[in-house]
Length: 56
Image (cartoon, rainbow, N blue to C red; front, side, top):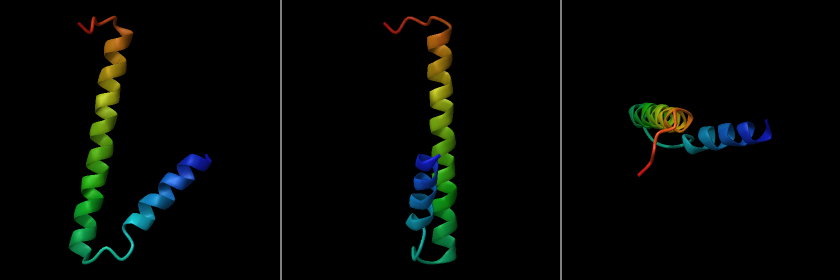
């Protein structure tokens, strides 16, 4: 739980005093998109491992 709190604090501190509202929104959307893509990659990797895919 402490790690989740630290990640949340780093996320909020990263967007303080960043610039205009448009820039803040762009980087927030990009960050969430990156988190989602990382989740998709991890899902695919775990799925491949669980089904016995041969990584040759």
